[in-house]
Image (tube, helix red, strand yellow):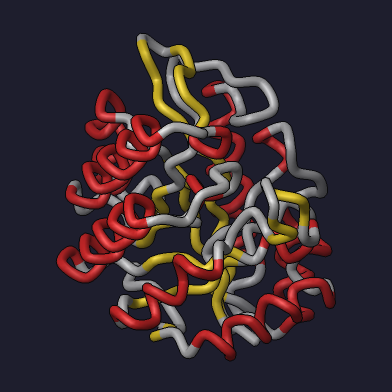
Length: 261
């Protein structure tokens, strides 16, 4: 069981459901101390239907979550944030949001790259060494900015990569070492436990967490935060998360309870 969840989406991204208050009520029902909203960052002049909301939805998102913060302040601690990619061209925008306290935090979800406002690569679909190196390099670049409170699903690149070999282990260790060097927690993401195991190459497994990756995390003792990655209010309380909690216990990870935000 967790007491704080910092990975929660809203309907604005186009692939989540429910209204904002329903997420809060589910979090209260679970007994959470903190619920962090971290919808996919909405960006000026970037349109990705069913991936992130249009930039015009930003203020409505801010207003809704801030209103809920006030309404439920005596029952739960609500935080306002974004899940954002390591898009260099938007680092100044991210920094401004944080500096002006428009949002409380950012989590680094390195889903894709941008080229002149257009998506060039989805890292959950990568199948080549070149793409994995790009994932690792862009991820660590984002980590080094100091803008992000944690790294969401750092093993995201293993979702559709079917080899676990010396090369992939080396990439994994570089990501984990960056987490240690920069003191940025890695998120153990519960979302795929709700989807169930799937055929991945010759394996039947979860897309992520990719367990061999997390065994290295355990050995290297990097900090780990657990994220529900809720895309529906019921994702917060569902029994389907229980398997994830059991796997967590078996891995003996260096789990932290909260983020420094």
